[in-house]
Amino acid sequence: MNNILIIDDEAPIRDILTSILEDEGYTVYSADSAENGIEELKTREFSLIFLDLWLPKMGGLEFVTNLKDEINPPEVIVISGHANVDIAVQVIKKGAFDCIEKPLDLTRLLTLSRDALDKYNSRQEGRILKETSIISSELIGDSPGIKDVKELIQQISQSDSRVMILGENGTGKEVVAREIFRNSKRNNKPFIEVNCAAIPDNLIESELFGHTKGAFTGAVDDRVGKFEAAHGGTLFLDEIADMSSTAQAKVLRAIQEQSFHRVGSDKLIDVDIRIISATNKNIKDEIKNGTFREDLFFRLGVIPIEIPALRDRIDDIPILADYFLKKINKDNITEKKIKESSLKLLNNHSWPGNVRELKNFIERICIVSPSDEIDLSDFINSISETAIKDSFMDDFLDLPLSKARDEFEKKLICSKLKESKGNITKAAVALGVYPSNLHSKIKKYGIEIVK
Image (cartoon, helix red, strand yellow):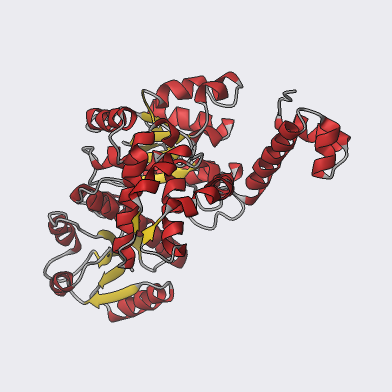
């Protein structure tokens, strides 16, 4: 839970702010002077401070200047009854997140609170990543393929070159992105992740670049986009190949000009970020089919990293299984182990869901096995059926309903066409639709019929 501190010498302002923020679920503390605020900071950790600019003795500007010397300072929103552009610029240059005028506008107050806390939490995550030396589970292994990935991460992390991570679902693309960030010179700045496949086409521009109040129906206040929130840090664009052509063009322009404008505004915002992108698709095929811009690929894929599928690094399977087993034992205070003679059975499975599937399988058998010594031969026959369900569902869990429905329908049609060896009539019967209806769906999804 985020703690918020209000520093203002006017009791009514403190009371109003406390009431509003507590209604939003925040834990709120208050102080009537900068000096008392400093004492509060010594007693607990705060994520955000609302600070009156005009305080007796130590003023707001001095407080902000001193605060930035702290190891992990909270974000600061300055409150002023005399706010103007010059003062706002001064305060923000000193390290404040933003400035808000009295009388307080409720909508702007809550918007700024959310955005400031998002920035603090992202910065906090980056600090934790920097301070820990935990090896990510998906990067555990001694196979040549995973060794190459780890070596490349070490080589490129300190540069600002853009990276594109390629790999199937469950191989650990997000983990690689976070490892690059953790080892980079930007690791004390925000790490902002965007799942491009999970955002509807009509909202992705606003999500990436933000919007101004009234820019479109439903835009009830100003909003900071992911590009702006990542300023100084790293922006991770996951499933980049699922982005619409319009959004691709906007991203390309922002990269080229290192600036953008919010939806509904003509004001250019300069940005300094490193971009890491990822996709589970064959990007060359996407370019060939015209669904992904080649010029954007050249901009984003300066350094490509291809993560091998688990079936291509089978020597790592026992190592990963042992890691997951130890972690589960630690979390659940158990002492389960896998029978050594049955461990090799894991290598006989193709693991279409990759490391994620293996992790789920180990967790599942630990839960259902009554014995502390697990014989995999009792469970191995159940892997394939469960894995197919898991990997099939993984493709849709992060998508909006309309896109998930289309993707599910396309996969189902492809499956039935494969079973019928390209016979549309037989596939239509299996699907319970008319052949003419199936023809329309095949055309809609651009499905190639292989007989």
